Image (cartoon, rainbow, N blue to C red):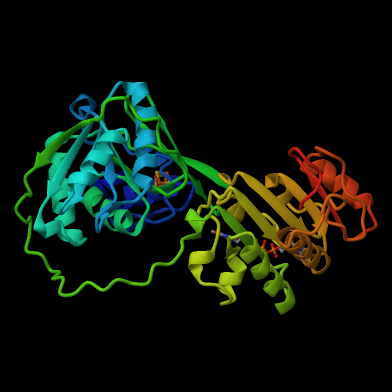
Length: 444
Ligand SMILES: Cc1cc2nc3c(=O)[nH]c(=O)nc-3n(C[C@H](O)[C@H](O)[C@H](O)COP(=O)(O)OP(=O)(O)OC[C@H]3O[C@@H](n4cnc5c(N)ncnc54)[C@H](O)[C@@H]3O)c2cc1C
Ligand code: SF4
């Protein structure tokens, strides 16, 4: 940050007192022939102009970077125990898109042991070149040897941008390596853009999701960012696979402080980010009966239960079930939200959902802005009916005459927008009505 330098040896008590009185913010304190700058300084530079060289501005020393020396967009191949995390291919897809702006190549760096097949998959998945560090030292993930290999790749290849999946592995590795290069890192980006001068615009929600911050790293290279799984889509792969380049494992930069003695597999948990069908419950689900019905609904649809943040805070769900800004980003084919208001922080996590059905008693709930099918009604009436109808379909009952969620109220008009649903719902006296922004006006 810029600051002020005061040549104290040039001061007299009178001059110090005079300069102190110049500051409109009272930030210059005189003590005899000594002057000090307090925290209230706004850097208005008035004292600099009035001091005849006694107070000067200290400018930041910006490092000069030759951006032409840094070329390529690199993706960390997220590899562990013989499998590649799918975020790898999503990042390769985005990297190919960004590379069109600058004409740079797309690289991948793969670290592990026994990586032959994974290297071929990454080469076929969109990387022009895959740099492979295959070593027994990398058989299990450990931050130190992995960071050494990653840093070696950056020193030798000099990629301009580095994209890392916001997985446990990526989140552990990216900040360490970024710190080694004294460069910036933007975590959990939700969008990325490339400028012609190779500056990567890293976009992410800030201030509780109320603004989308656009962050650049104009004076340092490489530019690091992490991106969550399911934000981008895998690429249409180029017809020819990329080149695989074996790299030698570098010597340890410093003695490793971690020794892996035993590796124990934890029971695999189904990640809500992977689910095709999700039933998400919010603070509107208040009774045990409603919760049991929501669980039944998820079972019937072969889906999983997820939740909004208050239910995690109340200890009802584990944090892994939370959708949203501080939870998981999800991309299911079907998402049913029950009693969720649709706050921006929740909505940020469902943008990729293919079909959203929202049930809420408040016709003005923001969730309806994100929903394709909007059901305005009380859960205690809508949920039992919904479950009953799905069970009936499953049991082969004749549903030809039953097409709506009949909770005693009018059904909405075909192809209404969320806004229209809210308007018509405000006029409705019943407790539940279903309407769609898609092809049909019913939920069944
Ligand atoms: C920095 C930050 C990060 C955050 N991250 C997240 C995040 O990742 N995920 C997240 O979810 N939140 C997050 N939040 C909190 C977020 O702002 C909201 O407070 C939260 O999403 C609200 O959860 P909700 O919709 O379940 O509850 P509420 O906002 O209380 O909504 C309950 C809804 O249920 C409806 N309802 C009530 N009774 C019934 C009924 N009988 N039948 C039908 N509908 C009914 C109501 O009309 C209401 O719309 C974050 C907040 C901050 C500040
Ligand atoms: S720069 Fe402005 S605010 Fe800061 S000490 Fe000088 S006069 Fe005061």
